[in-house]
Image 1 (cartoon, rainbow, N blue to C red):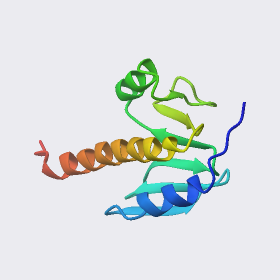
Image 2 (tube, rainbow, N blue to C red):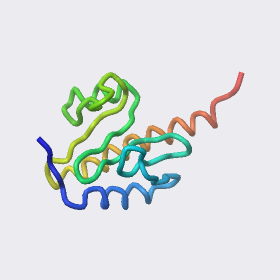
Image 3 (cartoon, one colour):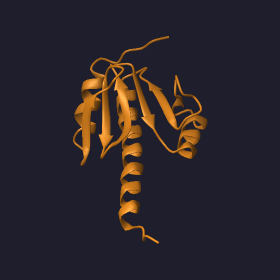
Length: 117
């Protein structure tokens, strides 16, 4: 079953694009992808679905808690698929993008502050 939440993509792109270091670009399969540095944190396909990258442990927890589904093409990867079914899902998608963004920023900071051996 397919759902649409009017203007979901526009609203999510507007919000996520405000975050420091985020670049919004056309996604190769349609929609908009978000990058922090050179790393994609996720992308949105129209007003119906977002695919967001997480470490596998976080992805597993989100799926277990029914906050997202395994990625529709790569179900064993760290990616999740989040489908929009109602208006409140726009805010939920933004929260998931924010979680991926925060984890990505933490990784970048740890790379910079980690002592080299």
